[in-house]
Image (tube, rainbow, N blue to C red; front, side, top):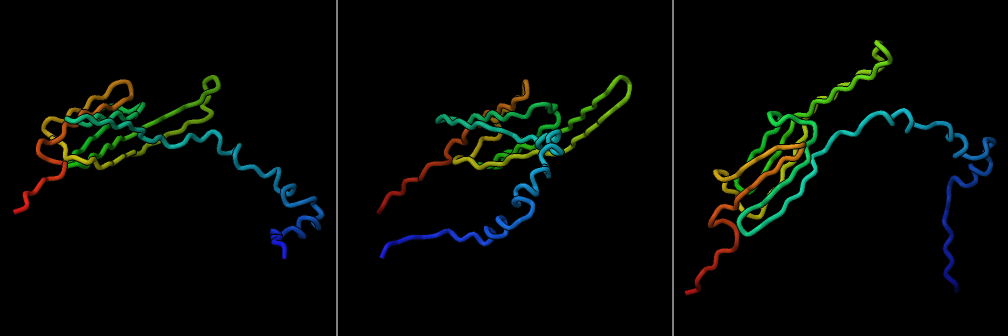
Amino acid sequence: MANSLMRFDPFGDIVRLSPFGGIDDLFKDFQLKPALRDLAAEPRIKMDVSETDQAYMVKAEIPGVKKEDIKVAVEGNKVSITAEIKKETEEKQGERVVRSERYYGQQSRSFTLANEIDDTQAVAKYQDGVLELSLPKKIGSGGAKQLTVN
């Protein structure tokens, strides 16, 4: 007995019998994409995290934000970055405003590191749209503690 599988298409007969030439032809002029092409996607915080024996280095891309609108919180081994994002655009034709858009929102990223952070030595610097964090590891934290078996 030979194995022959046939794919069942419940709508195959409907498409063949359609007076419109098929369902795809019916909806070909209905496109949502052109209506949405001018809307920009919400910005996201992109990050790189690197580690040495002494510290973690974080680089987070947060373009177009004032440093006063960025908050960094360190609690144990958890780090949270929050940014208030404000974007306004205005399109004019001569003196007449054709389009004006505003976006106000908050972006945040939180992550957990393997070692606790020494928050008294942590440093945050923001320049040219990049937030750089230097997060020294807490001495004596992390790693497995060896127990002596008696």
